[in-house]
Length: 450
Image 1 (cartoon, one colour):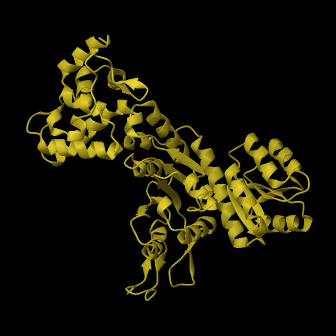
Image 2: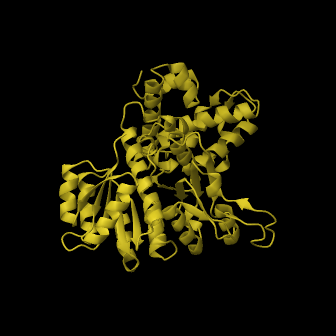
Image 3: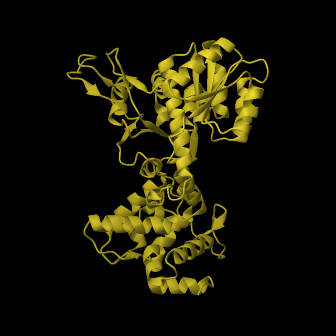
């Protein structure tokens, strides 16, 4: 394999010379630029695997060079070197898309690890562009035919083969953990551990112990040494749910792990190297938490390398028939019941309802309905009262607006999408929609789709 080619950008000639010697000793090919302007010219002329640049330079500083390099080729990882007194520059760099930042004087072990990660990112990004490499596992976990869900699945399949840290945002119950599992399933880490932890479920001292582990006797009740979730996830993926609830003191320690790739057990001076991809999730707007001083800005940008937003169910109502039918099959089998689908009235009620609890609330409602149903079809009366009492069209027959679409628009789109997916197999389409074949024919005629 060819040597990875790295561009060193620094107007300090002795420092640049030292870095050249070190990197070549590690087996890398090296080119040099004495300022940001020369670096941009070289990036446009040659294909570099990574760029290592200082921030303060007389002619076009590192931040400006980063901006131009990202515009020219956003796939090149750019690592920023900055003094402790200029940490704000590092935060600005992360905001603009820098892959990582290192503080001066450089720790060579930290530099080596950061370069290895950056080059892995470059390699995996290139591999993901090869025919047949992108995995389609996401579509099997993230159910939905709506445009919003198709876009989300496409983003998951794009970022999954890389090593990028991902921040998944969305309301409670939208399925953020499913997104994380879809990323893992479509990544090169698919056969490695997928470890989860809810940052809101534990007190601060317990959360620290769960994340990083502890030594025997580190605190009252620590009767044996325990490895933390980071070590458990070594080689795989760690899912940090409700990251917005993490105390500030622990945020600093998490940032250190993300920067240096090593953890320190509570009560121990020894550090342990870990290879873990982190996916975090939150139902808060973390940018607002940063502004309020409740979340570290540098950690936010470290986590938000790739940001994914999971749409609420009310924004993709055309997915309700597929989701409801999938949950129906699952819970009917679990409860040893033979249920073919939903009555038209039950499906209409589910389409009208706002689902503030999103997909989780829908699944709970369907499970309840399955348990209460005695016939072959789930009737409206088996659904929760809130669903039964969802607003209906008024007496003049005006359509009820559902976001930007009426109820009938949503129903027609759901039928059209299901027929396309089943290649016009009406029996299968009726089954997936949770209605009878006769009801489907009636609706096809109503909407002029027959």
